[in-house]
Length: 374
Image (cartoon, rainbow, N blue to C red; front, side):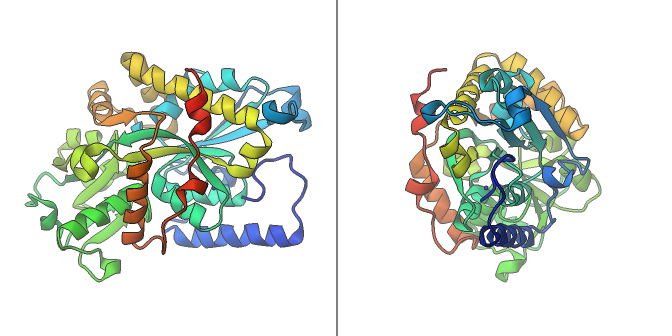
């Protein structure tokens, strides 16, 4: 998700600067909420959240690490969402796994609410890496943002729920209703459109009568309570929170698509940053694998870590029961099934967010993460 991916690079030439500004404007125009990013001092709940750790003299002076395969960056700027589908990232931050692995590279963590905000930050050159859905990652890549997917982070972990008094018994019954998704072009938006198409429905912008309403996931419980929307396709834990609030599960994580074997979150890195600092890339991916193992092997501690991070990022604290349900519907993993990712690219086209599928050979590189030991 840019031509100026790290703070200490020399100033851009006028043509490249103009290109970066153009990309920023185009991506911002595609976001229905004009998403807030860490670059503008606003984050998940409009309050701007960023933290820095691992500061070193290298980071302060702008010097790089060793040359060659072990070259490291002065700083890594990492983006995260307050979702269970980002559990690996949340645990990595909470447990200090990233800071330890990065060594002398300073870590700056910024919080975002959706993929549109992440894309804007990458285009503006204020992020180096992020956890994000495959939909926004593909769309940014197709718009020229120099991104590469270096690891998976989660499969499934999203559900479709309806108001408790809704008469909807199937997706076909959503005709004429308002359905919330995190943002236009998000992985959940693409999944919803596919479900609607399978059931003979279309969204209003496609000439149908289902209205898609972009709402930040952490704000969906309030939107449901006020009757703003009648349904939502949302990531965990907010699906579990909505259920606990009285919402009724219409489609579980396995019914959304591919029996639950679909990528919901990936770890992307600015390609230019990764090429210049391969040592930092390896350190990031090593910590990511450690965080995935932590979630898988220490579920109680992982839930506590995720809870702390969610509360810090949103001011909302899901119950332990909600987190247990949310994690039971989410597969935290560092790997990706490339076949299902290719199928997802086709769904992205079907939804109208891209004229063609991305070249996965250019977008996806799992060689580094697969070469690492936990």
